[in-house]
Image 1: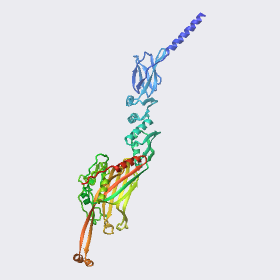
Image 2: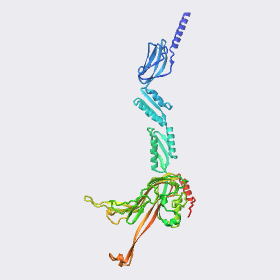
Image 3: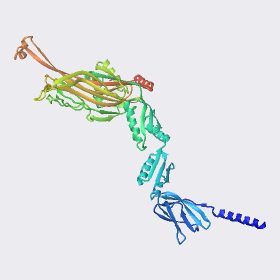
Image 4: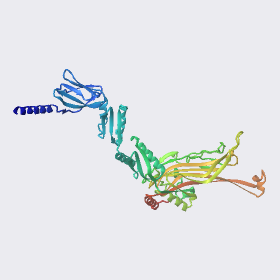
Length: 527
């Protein structure tokens, strides 16, 4: 009985000792570059083994040194064995040769993870950092066949980035949300062209975020109304000078500025002048002639410019500072000084309205006005073709396109083309056109009047006087019984444009600013 107990106790002791011998120690992981061999601590093992010979192989050399050789990408256990069995193990990760480079590329991007999955290198994570996304693309180029990039954008972070971009671009009333693979913009803008331009800018900003598109369906156009008042004035230089004004040349050249305002304007001026059929158009820059469609001749004169020589065809000026001396060196006026000075000249008979019209349009939509007609000219018939009828427009042709920038500013593109038919015959070859053309771009405020240009118009007249009937005798009657007198009148033509507009949402601000401009006290010093 006693011997049976001893045998049982011995069996339990052996079982306990055996169980203690197979307790496996977990060692830190190590990496091995594929196709390279590294030495590891043998841990006094009698043997080392690989849990997966396809990933790496392990061996114990005669010197007692353990070595591991990487075979292909993957992870397996390295096992240490002695007489008791496997007493320790460590994970071995076989990595590609560029592993350290890859990890350094994203060392400052904790949101990016790099793992070995099967025989692939997977780069995963979510970010809104443009530089990080660029490095992801560069990482892919290290091994295109085995590197898999699954880095996506963070919708919340991208939305914040687009919002900051919109604020920097001045679109503070536009919001952005990322829904799926779309950046959805919402809000209101002044015209369809502005919406399209904003869409292109946001698309350019998102070019480093692959798979994202821009949706502008929620962008609406403000309800608006723009009125452009156009007035042609005749200007009597003699009366104006008697009143102390220096003349309208100051409008296109010698401008004095009110430094309390800061708006820019760019002016592109192209003018053509000739003297044909008794009419002379003398612009403030260049004088040329424009003949007929078939190159018919005509009397051409080159007239000296009436503006400052420094005035060029393209120049940038601070027009928002307005014409403090638009019509005279002694007139001290502010933003509304153009209209105030013109009204003063009208009351004293120095200026008179020749023609006035008002155009109504919306931001980004061209408004066109024509006061004239169409000339129909027939081209000469050729040997194998019949004559063709050509349509040629004449008169005042005005084309203007406003672009609202904000409640206080509008960008106005203004084109004026004045063509007058001065032909003396009816054939196609006798076509003669006098032409005055100006193209301008300005930034203006609501209720502000601007003088776009001034030019001279000379009309030549011929009158005959003599004894009735006798002066009509052929050849000699005019010389014996009559006389002929030539006279010419020179008139300065002034073009003044006033812009007013109202927009849903900021019309109250616009109306308030316009009222302030109209009610502003204007002082005009008389000589």
